[in-house]
Length: 213
Image (cartoon, rainbow, N blue to C red):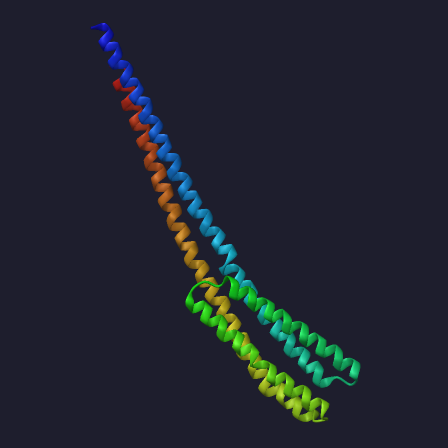
């Protein structure tokens, strides 16, 4: 009889340890999964919306530089100055395309992809304006070149800058949505952790009490 009671007590102790192990495993798995989800959201924010926002702002800045360089093209007094200004325009243009490529690679959602395509096409449409200014300069039509740069060119650059700001705003809205999602998951993980901690203490007390009977 004593041996039978000892066997039962031994099994209760074993079962109790198994339950505690299962509890800690559940706690660990839940925590790791929650942290992994938070890490993935954080990585997405840094790899996509923030990258797109920074690239859009950089492209807008290069557009401003490009337009300023076009004014230098029109005001150049020598072939050397003209060549230097044209090189500055070409560099800013290449930088804008590079930033737009970054946007295209990282922007999320069909709305964002459409916005990027519209912005790229608008930028492509700027090239004929630039070419017209250069043709007029080489033909000696300086007044016409100045007028195009200050009117049509400036208006087009303004539209482009507005589009770049739209891209940046879209990206930041995406980042805000991801941050809200991350905060929601953090709150859920915190609640689950508290619940499992309390449950763990309670179950441990119950197991300790049962196994001593």
